[in-house]
Amino acid sequence: MHPILARKGRLGPFLLAGIPLAAVLTGLLARPGAFTVAESVSLALPLALVCLFLLLPVWYTCRAVPVRGGSPLRIVLTHAVAAALTSSVWVLSGAGAARLLAPFWGSGFPSRYAGEVPILFSTGVLLYLLAVALYSVLIAIEAARDAERRALELQVLAREAELKALRAQIHPHFLFNSLNSISALVGTDPPRAREMCLYLSDFLRKSLALGERKSIPVGEEVALAKAYLEVEGLRFGSRLTVEEELETEGKECLVPPLLLQPLVENAVRHGIATRIEGGVIRLEARRTGNRLRILIENPFDPEAPPRRGTGVGLANVRSRLAARYGSDAFFAARRLADRYLVVLSMPAQVTE
Amino acid sequence: MTDRAAPEIRVLIVDDEGPARSILREMLSSRADVSILAECANGFEAVKAAAELAPDVVFLDVEMPKLDGFEVRELIDPEIAIVFVTAYDSYALRAFEVHAVDYVLKPFRAERLDAALERARARLGQPRTPADPTSLAAAARPPGTHLSRIVVRDGTRVHVVPVDKLDLVEAQDDYVCLKTEGKKLLKQQTIGGLADALDPNRFVRVHRSYIVNLDRLERLELYSKGSYVAILADGSRIPVSREGYARLKALLGTEDGA
Image 1 (cartoon, chains in turn cyan, yellow):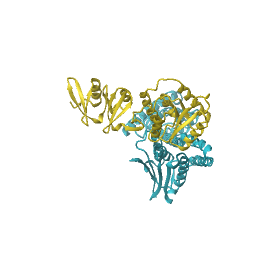
Image 2: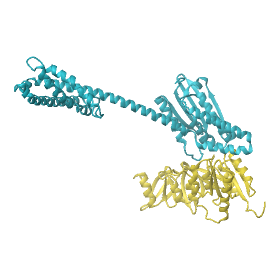
Image 3: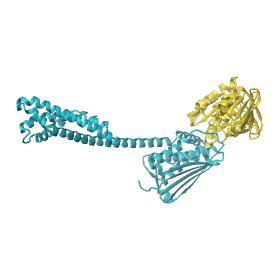
C-alpha cells in the first residue's frame, strides 16, 4: 500500500512539505538577471504543488523495480526514463504557469521562464531521485517489519507444534489400561490397587508440571519415565523389568520435557508387551565432552503380529529434537535381531 | 445349579495382563450360569484351549504376544461367540466384520459384562451360518494394508508364516495349501480371498489354482502354443493361465524369459 495515500490524514502533512520545497525553488529562481522574489514565489508555489503530486506515484515505480533482487541495469534504466519523464512534465507545467502569469509580470515572462528550463529540469531529476531514496528507505523498513512479524509467527507455530506433540505423548489407552488394572486390583489386592493409584497420580502430576517447562534435567526426565514404567509394571507384573545407567554428569544435562516418553511407551507396547516372557528395558544417559547421549534398549518379538502406531512416537521425538537443536541432534532407531535400540545424541546443555 | 435357570455358558478368558484376567474372572465367577474353562495369557494358548475345551464364548483381548485377538478369532471354530475386551476403540469396526457378539471397552462395569453375556447367550440359542473364513482372514489385518503373515492351525498347534517365506499357494477344494520352507500347510480359506489379501506386486495368481511368490519365480517356459509354465527356484513347474500370463507380463514388463 502507498505509505501516504493508504491512510487518511497523511496527505495534509505531506502537502505541508510543499512549503520548504517552494522556498527552495524560490531561492533557485530569484537570482539577479532571472526573476524577482515576488515573481519567483508566484512560480515556485504551483511548481512545488505539481512536484508533490508528480512524486506520489514514484512509490509504485520503486515497488516495481525493487533495489534488492532486481538487475542493476533495469533499475537504473527504469528510474532514468521515469525521472526524465517526470521532470519534463514538471517543467512543462511550469511553462503553463508562466504563461498564465504573463498578464501580471509582462509578456516577456514565459520566455524568461524558458531560460530557466535546464536548471529546473535538473532540479526535477534531483527531486525525483530524492523521492526514490525516501521510498526505498520506507520499503526497506516495511520489509524488515514483515520479516520480524513472520519470524514471530513461526516461533508461535513452533511452540504450538511442541505443545501439540506433548499432549499427543500420553496415550489415553495407557490410562484406560491402568484404570482397568486398578479396577481389577480393588477386588483382589486392595493395597496394590492403592499403590497403583499413587504411581499413576505421581506420573500424571509430574508430566503435567513438566510439560509447562521448556527444558528439564535428564534426571527428572528419567524419573518420570520410571513413574510411567512403575504403572506399566503393575499391569505386566514380572514381565517388565527396568535397568538404568545414569551418569551424574549426564543427569544434569537439559532436554525438552517428555522427550523420552514416546520412546518408553514404544518400548513397552511394541517391545515388552509382544513377548510372553517380557524382558528388560534399559535406559542410559551419558555425557561425553559437550555431547549428551541417551540410549533406550528393549527386546521385542520379531514375529509378533503387526501393531499400529509405531511411527508416530518416533517421528514426534525426531521433530522435537530437530526443532530444538536443528542439525546438531542425532537420532537413530535400529532393530538388532530381537532387540530394539534407540540412540539420541544432542549438545550437552546445563543452562538454558 | 438350578435346572430352571438358563443353560450354563462355558467361557474362556484370554488376556496377556494378569490384572485384566483377574477382573474378568472376578465378575464372571460371581454368576451362577457361567463356568470359566480356562484363562490364557497369549494367542497360542487361546487357540489350543479353544480347540480342546470348545467354549461357548471367548472374552478376548486384541493386542497380545504371538497372535493378536483377530488372528485367534480366525483360527478358532467360527461357531464360538467372541466378546472383544480392549482399551482401544479403534478395533470396533474390524470386530464387527468378524461377527463379534460384543466389544467391551476397558475399564468396564459388571453390568456391561452381563449385557455382553446376554448377547452371547442370545446368539448361542440360534442356529446360524458360520462366518465366512475368508472375511475373517480379511478382517485380521488393518484396513488398507497387505497381509504380512498368515496364521494356520494344525490341530492345537499354530503355524505363523511370514509372507516373505511363502513360496507358493495351491487351491485344494475349500482349502489352500501353503508351501513354505519345504513344508506344506493346509488352511481353510479360498484362494481368491488369499490372493486379495496378499500384496499384488509380490504375489501373482498365475492360475485359477495357484499363487506364486514373484521372488521364487525363476523363468517362464513355453509349454504349447500360447500356454506357459512357471519354473520356480526349487524346480517345481506351475501351470500359467492366459490371465495369469497377462498379470505376470504387466508386472515384469516384456522380459518373460521364454
